[in-house]
Length: 492
Image 1 (cartoon, rainbow, N blue to C red):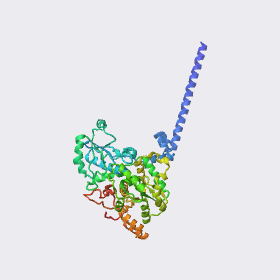
Image 2: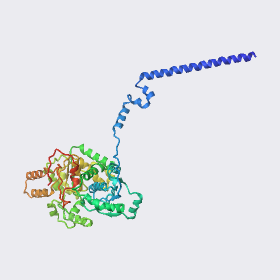
Image 3: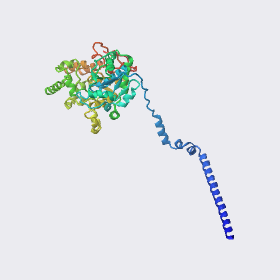
Image 4: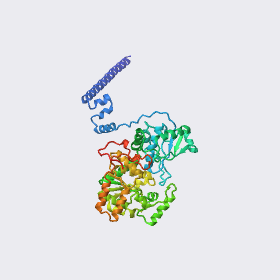
């Protein structure tokens, strides 16, 4: 009995000791925790907010690098898409563009505008793959297709392809297809094309070049053409980035001029202009002209055409004109063109007068252009970007690129574009070469005649019965241009 009683007392003592030990641990822990809280409160703006408000505020004052990154992220505005325009869809419009890059570019602007006016859904335009250049590029290979669609959603609905039920019509060849009449007023599309869309649900326009008149259109029509051209049609990031590289390389070496030298083999064969060519070359160009049935003019008098100002200037003539205009021979001359016909021989005088001749092929490595080989429209897109940024742009022929770049440079603030009067110039050149004019007389005549041909504000000429001869809308979209400090000059 005594043993049992003694054992019970010992257990009671141990229990009391354990409880006191537990109390001491709790008390110590409480003191430590309270001390921590006091310390955290003391540092206030440093670690206190981390406990009370969450971890992100830990970087508010201490980590300046995070603050800079955060500020940069917040400073980039989120892309705000325009609200979708809600309208009753009258049907679907498919278009197949024809020609080179800039002819197609202008056509796309027209087709978007027409689709908007007719309240139809436009299918992303198909690009020409069957012309002389045989470029297999799709729309999305040249232009940022998503930007094109979303940036215009407040005007017109654009889809990448027809809905499945209608797509089958294309696959079976039962879509109504036609070429619209050239230089048509917008009312033509309302009165002639829209009823066809109502009837067939889908209409395919198989030619798109110059199918909307230059003049006499409502102001909102003209402004939408500009919006598509200058905002919605953005090149792919790959083309844009390479274009910026070329421009940077040029800028590193000072001012540069872009010379749009239209002296490629196809240009000469098509136009029949053979000034400076030998007999063998003339025969080669003639054979080429007859080989393409869609080049309708076959028998051409080259000398007469040249005197009428309808031929591109030759490289030799161009060298004379640049010198006569007092273009500094220390300037870089960027040749925006394809392969020059008989290049080494024909370019000799120009290279001698202006030794800093460059091309994208000489500025970039072959690997940089590898993706663009055999894609003439993508190569032309690079030249387009460089042309926009040049100090001076000089086209030797008034083709589609010359006209569209001219208009875009006007939009960018009337950047200097020298518009050569070829009819006058070939006459002056012939007089100089024959000895009838001295160099000073020749140079003064060239400069005086081009005083007001440098891209200043002008009014488009309007020739109602001769739309091909009047000023092209995309060369001078005056309805979309801001006033300039230049004086207004009448178009001649």
